Image (cartoon, rainbow, N blue to C red; front, side, top):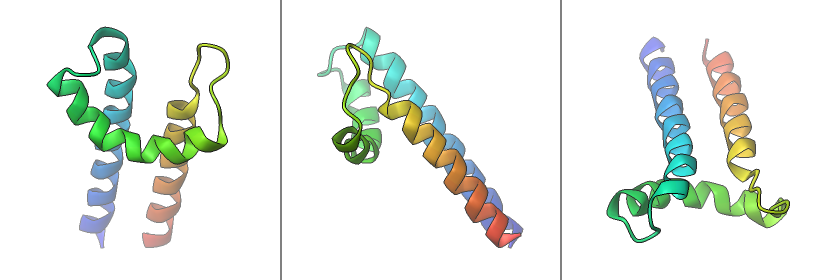
Length: 83
């Protein structure tokens, strides 16, 4: 059971860093840059449903923050059930 908990924790951390990288790369790289496209392919399917519910506020997009909160809550909930 501990291997499953470790796998979920590692997967959660990878997604966490991918979301952070998505935010940072969106400021510095063109949308057509291969690295940004790779990260976008991972993160965008997770952000799109949140963006439909939570529109941008001015120039700010809070969907990555909401996704990080959901990811943290889901990870803690799943690991709590498995322990």
